[in-house]
Length: 325
Image (cartoon, rainbow, N blue to C red):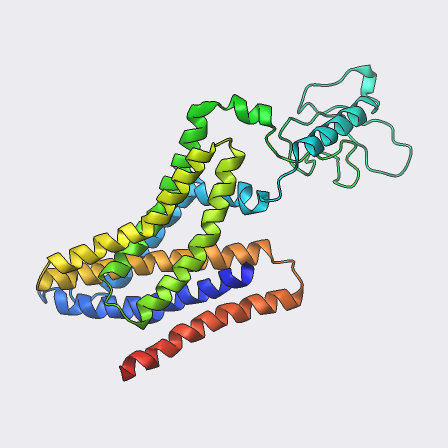
């Protein structure tokens, strides 16, 4: 999966930098009047930069992508309900057997004097974990290996999922779908106005490879929030239609307008798509893989970078093929 992500990252980045932005900027120079304030300026790069910032703002403010990554692909191996009950039971037994200062269990988050330890371990402060505690203990004076309380997996039990209610179970998938669809429809629109050729074909391959993995993460995330089969099916179909819908809008716009307006639609649409490709390739794919797999074996990291280099090389080779066409 990570190799496919890095290959797609190379295709996205090289496609935007080597194909889309130069073509869009060339179209902008022939479209913008000489008397305009924008004449002679890299308008395509300006539009792509604005799209990059807008996408970063949407993702960062809504937290949609981080939410899907935290609860999606990483949660495909869901703890079974029986295993979860056993773990919680063991954790409760362990907590009840730990001596607490003055035989009083403190309120959560309140720091208490350290309990005497039989060995050289750092002092452990008695504390309780909430139902959705993280896998590591962050209490002052407590280390992961010496934490007296067993870590509890962050999973919603069937009872907790049912308590969320049908409204929230529908609103969360809708929210995630809306946030993740922003760059999908922009990328589709840009491809719709882009003249069909080898660049467009490679871009579609990269989009489908990326969207398949993202759709899996989205479905896994909304399932963990208690969404029913109907909601999951509706979200999956809707997400699959977003990019083709953007493509149809771009193609229809390109066909309906004529003259200078058509050139303007082309360079604006391709610039929008280039900004989307830069964000997806740089932030969603490259940065995510480097951050998550930064401690992987050297061989895997080298393979990841070779996969990205292969994507860049493929898009670079298309420059020479297009020149011969």
